Length: 163
Length: 83
Image 1: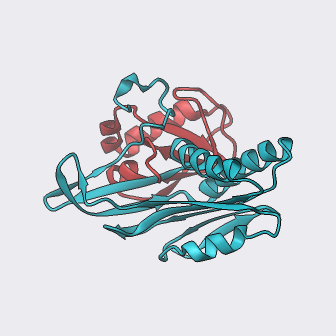
Image 2: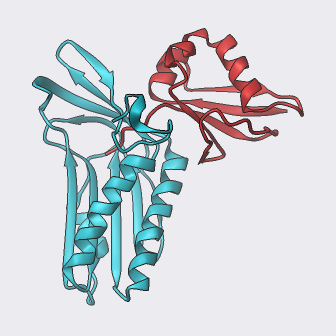
């Protein structure tokens, strides 16, 4: 797919069929007022419950995903602003095939002091998994399966097999 | 008047298409749309209700009945798995 992105003064979100670039995310969050840059990379693991994983394949509801990523980024910036902490935030998600060892999601956050940047990465990946309409299919040597995030609460309570 | 329907992940595979258009009457809702879709794409029954609709890029509560109007964009959202 063609890369699609949305950004504000302090944040940027992107979904793309191309390989993700951590340096680019870090560059976006660089700020003279920052004393810390924290990053998170989600990468394809070679196994799931002992079974060899070959690749993941992601698909995305692009318009809605960017809307949700924007909302999550604004939540983080607003909360940091209330604490008088500067923050810049970049998040990128890949779609299509992602092979073992490659990143499917990158987050970079900068803040005056380290705590907010570290917390922002943690919070954004959890919120992304819970609310952004992106799906992954896990491919084994002998089949494939659509994954479901434990964080996804869209069907109501988690006792319905989502946990 | 028509509503645009998008299918993702397993719902896309079951429907065999990623997008369709459904004509709706003034009284139509997400509930009547679902009946129509299950008739048009019987394989969607295999989802066993494990999805929600989104309407114009916002999630709807599972099983909620919401009126539809021309130009709406509805998507079938199976459990998400980004990240």
